[in-house]
Length: 494
Image (cartoon, rainbow, N blue to C red):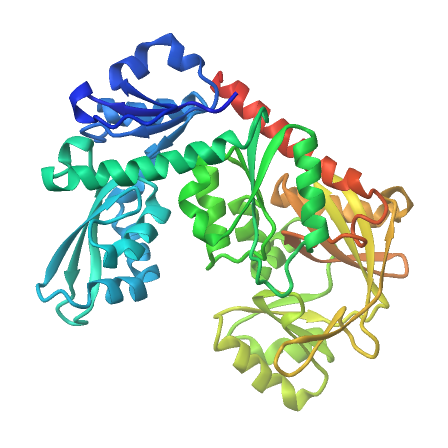
């Protein structure tokens, strides 16, 4: 049956809007009536007068999350709105749209009302939508000021407001945009049929080297829907909709200074099951962290040196030449350089240190291929050998502009056919990161195995990583996500 949608208010006079399938509920009834406690997965639009700590409005959002419902604003969003640090980040992220929207305004400050991502003045709709995407409160009021030194508009404060705070002259507009928004939501929800849970798959349709190709993404959807997920592809523009879902699978290349990390953090804070979880992204995308982790736990790895300005002259002495230099956040063979000549070493190190205070230097271990072991929930799920590109020392060969122009061949093996030492090393290091989905890269030289790195968000492409298990690979990933969703719902009593 369709998921219930509730509008929660302090008193009946606060909200006169009547939308089919949307129920208006008094806050005290929502908190105390057992009927609402037993609702499964309801969407709760909290329009109470106050969201201050331990007020009725605060408890509506807090207990909605505890019941497995999906509150807007969430208790997390309310706290985010109080954080000057988060507001500064939001202001920086939205600089272009803020300046464009507010450019004609002559005064030094401006109040912007945000109603379900809209504003009464159409020219401010894009800014209102972006604020709604970031903070997901249905009704908000933003205060902008012009900086004395910069002369630019900045976001000074942003607070959720209640239905009673809407000026009389805005009320008809708010009713129209609320009806439009909520009716659209009902149409989307009704298409989900009898599926138990909702899964979002975050992708970038324009990404050139995405972690899953289109065919693999379709297999993810087929696997998810076969076990009870209603599945929807989302993009970076759907940030505000995260609370509509029970789980998030990220199939877009991740980075810490990137919307993928913000999606992971927000989803985790909202109680969604997330792969890749924010902690895994943070750990795996920084090779300095991985180097320190592997040294501390005696994980076999190539000789490694964390390089900074005070020890950059020791690289050749300690590691020899050729040596491999890596930016901490390098990926897909980008930001990774092999230096064979002593004359090239210092300028190359200096160039990399311009971007990061720390970089990684690693002894060069030539091999015909790298092992890639896929690990999920602390278990190996696939094994590949990625061979070096012809005449090159890496799997991917790029031109001077960083564009991929060649790629080595691969083969995929049953996990049980992989040398035990490779699996053992892969599991040991992956399990230090967490219980998410990882791709562990290793080299094998004779009887010795060396861990190169652990990747969150590993490639899963049709005909490559799924060559052995085929559809079962996608089912295994989806079963883990479903099991985690069910466990969380049981914990909430929903």
